[in-house]
Length: 262
Image (cartoon, rainbow, N blue to C red):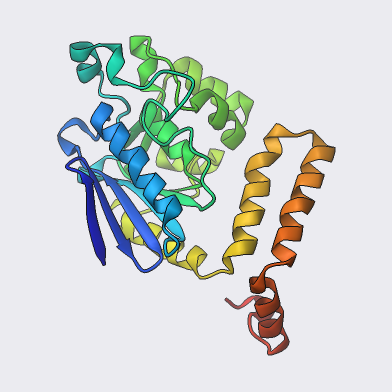
């Protein structure tokens, strides 16, 4: 296991092909101030450029995923502490990044306000039974500016997203699973372990194909149906040229992976 400290509030571990990035401010339910946002962005940039890292996990220390922006720090130091310009990183760090590799959110406890937005930025969400999602910033008049109004309806649909965004109500794990906000619900004590298992599973697939299929899925919202189909073909053609494809066909010919086995 390779362990690095991006900052005192962001911890980075890499085991094999899986990088785990942990928000480490449990005393404030992992609410994010400016230094933490910057460290999170830097950690994910390093993950993106690490050729040996295939999947990342975003986790919160101490029983909560993330309570969003540290509003006390904002009130004390002013708006300048969060990044609110159109260019550069998002206010909470990585939320404007378009990575080429998947990220899994391991969610226990509160994933609210900006914490919900961080979870939505991730590709998959493995949730403990203690998980609570919600636009809790509604009660203080703080907007969603880390992609919440964009990603939430794409994940759960317009009607359900409108309900969450207008009311600010809490959504617990089982309801989140039913609406598609959570991909897995497990015992809270097993959240990180189950996220690691899922990350290991994804990391074992031929990477060129998985990443190209993922990118086509991510990019399709910027196209009409015809443009999305052409974009899928472009990514697919890149995969067909990949050595992974040739290796996969050889393994299939030898009988590997048939009948639904992995």
